[in-house]
Image 1 (cartoon, rainbow, N blue to C red):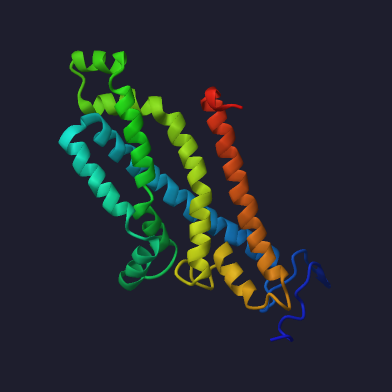
Image 2 (image 1 turned 45 degrees about the horizontal axis):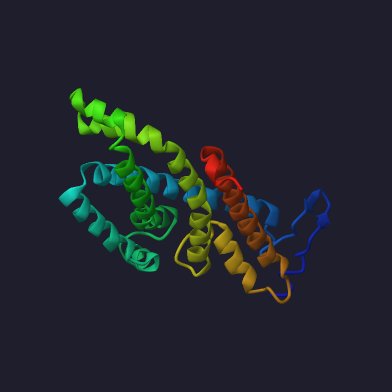
Length: 240
């Protein structure tokens, strides 16, 4: 294995090839694999979060607008879904479906919408007593029109901030599941699978683990900072 790893290093130049991040134990360019892993990890995170937001906005909007018995039933269902662990869903889906990108997106989307639904429900309950909603009701507007044309546009800022802050969590969850072998499967590369490969040779070649870990960390930090700035921009009262 040491022979296979002899090209790993920060810079490796052989003839016309220059590897800025070195190569892995199979001689593959780590720079290319890092960015290919970024493409898969970010695709999974964005798709899962977008699906979560769509489901959460619709579910929370209906629950908050109608209230009463419907709200109680929908919130109890949300609590049950929220109590189901990610790992259990992933393991069940791996038995039923082929492990891969689509499986992990479905797993993240099945339980990740609850937080958005609760947030939207609370805002809808607050807004539905406002004059513009009461006026729309008095003019005979349907609940679908009121929710879609009056309530949801007024909570988009909160939804956008929530979406931005949910992306780092999705990135970390995907990386963790791929790291333990329940997410993206080799030969596909995500940051989680790269970290899984790197930890096997960490003592001899720490760069193979440090690189994906660094990009996971810096990406999560970037989205968290972006979410904080958007929250400050949309709600000046939160500025310090």
